[in-house]
Image (cartoon, rainbow, N blue to C red; front, side, top):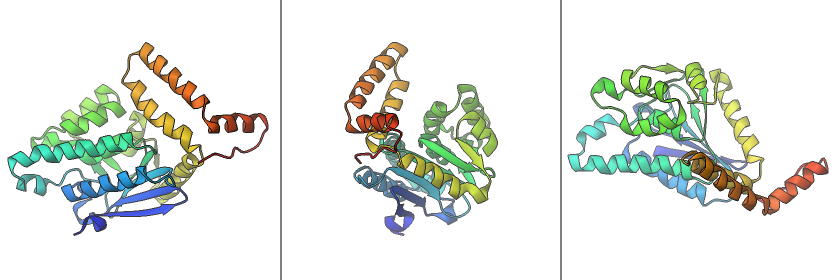
Length: 258
């Protein structure tokens, strides 16, 4: 199967919809699928027409994690390259200039749960379930742990990692792993509405704000405030900030520079 068929892309109104397309394998993250997703994200990052990206899964599940058959079939020295590729993929999502929304249905387990946690936002069907179940097969979910522990509290993350138990979507929303848990019939409309709201904002402002959010989160408090203040100064110098303030004062809709 070619990389192109492993991942589907459709663009509408500034929103790029990426669909993992290994439904028979529950969209397990094989090396070719990760390669295709990395390439698509790079293309999105270079495309000024795209303002939001959505990652979804074809078939009955969002993503069941790594492909265990592939893992068992790889020589030992290839394991490091595979996990390095996965880590690079997750960091590419965080570092992408546009916000990324996970559209989750079915299951999101192990590296699939990591994928959800790595996205900037996530909307799940209320029937979706989440887990880091590696401990059940003697393989602690160490790399999923990185994204998970940054999305939910430490004790909640440890419980998921140590038990491998499934978490339902309402609980995932309560913990902050996803933003919203909605009826499955409303999932696409909810994701689309959220993406459209974000796409309507100034791309310059969002492009400044997303990296600043992640950068300050890793800093001590005083350093974070100094950094954020510098970002505000830079933002204030942008044409879109001038336009947005003027539009607010004049009680009209802003016209962003794009």
